[in-house]
Structures are given as C-alpha cells and as structure tokens.
Length: 129
Image (cartoon, rainbow, N blue to C red):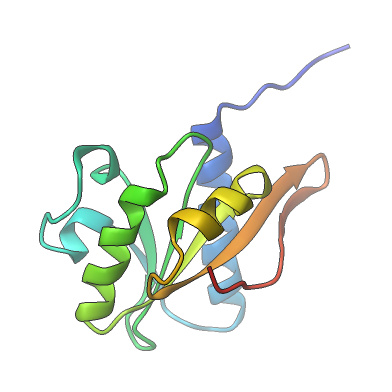
C-alpha cells in the first residue's frame, strides 16, 4: 500500500492552481503576484511569501492561505489592497474558518473555505468575516 503525503505548501499550491483553472475556464486572464508587491512591501515578514491570484480586469485578488498562518496579520494586507481598489477573497482551510471570521472581522474582504480529499480540491461558499 502506498501512502501519499503532501505538505501544506504543496496543497496550497494545488488550491492556487484550482483557483487559476476556475478563472481560465471563464476565459478570464489571471496571473500570480506576490502580495508584498501589491501593497508596496507593507506586510509583515511572515506574509512576504504569500502569492495572490490576480484578475486585473476585475480588480480581484485571491490569496490562498495554508495551515498555520496568523490570519490577524492578513487584515493589514486586506486594508492596503482595498485602499488600492482591489476586492479581496482570502481562501482558508476549513479548519481555520472560525479563526478567519475572528481575525478578519470588519476587514474589507470575503473569506472562502477550501478542503482537499482524494477526489480533488473543493471550495465552500463565500462568507463575510
């Protein structure tokens, strides 16, 4: 019996790929961009490695969060992106949806749970924190 173990980084990359595929299926142009570039470096060090899926035509950015990220630090990035005219969705593992509601309360973003299983990557409904 073989056992496949993916790191959370690999899973987050798969979630990012699924987000890109959803935009591509709708024939929308997207790219990935470091969050620190989008907010002119105004993020804490632990957020500097985060990447957003960006649909510039719609001014939409989606950030995939993996397990263990301090979501309270992401609120500052949400405010900075909103100040630059971006609509933000933060995609969080279902295990962190409660923390996302608490940490991002009143931040200008939506949150969306994601999870993976043997059949693929799945997304829940958009929620307001």
